[in-house]
Image (cartoon, rainbow, N blue to C red; front, side, top):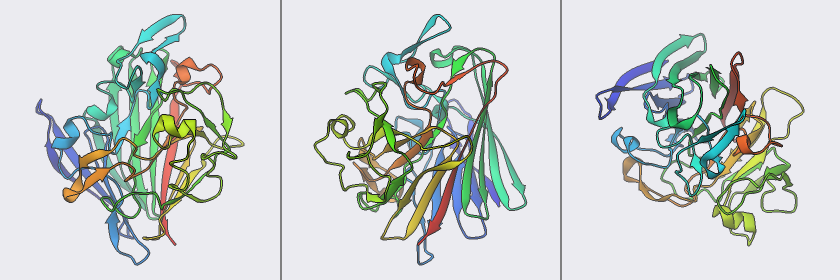
Length: 350
């Protein structure tokens, strides 16, 4: 089922709509047309009690100013591009510097800071919203007019899928993702250090002190980055490890194990207290595991204060800084090609 209501108005007078998707088991996903942002996700715990497992705000106003990308649909390029520049087909492009010396999450006004066109649908066991946005040539420094369609779908199997499509009239880098912050015990319930995490990744991409990949692809085995078997997020998060130090915890891209194209599991998180399980499947080659290291007393929903490590993100993606890393999978979309990736969140309990 889909319900639509007005969530608020932007300073320039544009209406922002809020869509609520629900399935027969009571799972509820709320999203809005401002930034394609996931506002809340309510799922049952092991006793059947519904709780909101995502960080965010109660009203539109805090989303309109700077915030930690809560629930955001990120583009044109999710994650970081080193020194805020890249070369493509012999031409250098300069981006806004908005994260140390680097460009982060699409720039000063990325896809999370625009109003998307939306159309809801109900089809059999599925309910969803189709979002569309056209990013003009030169927007935030990126070449080409990019036509983007993102489809959010909730089904009766307790799965929420995000389908990304895009076409361009000039070659351009593209890396679309979603930046939802999860706390499976419920938003505002404290830190996520006891959450057990499994990552389907034997390798990760080490970074420098500004969190730009060095270009190496390193084994996780024997390091604090080994989540190939279930491990509490907090078990090694304070280890004296250079990479942990650079990130202030985990803020790294993991190389998903895959034998071919299609959906594979990127990660699975389990909260022993609530019994909630979140599995993230994707067609993408990487996933950014982030432990909310920069949350610093954000005033969130219901008067809750969000502090460091009160949530985690599993952002499915191509690797950071790929336009400057020739040995990474390419993120360049060219005219005549279609960008298409899918990520699925699977909710359950145990």
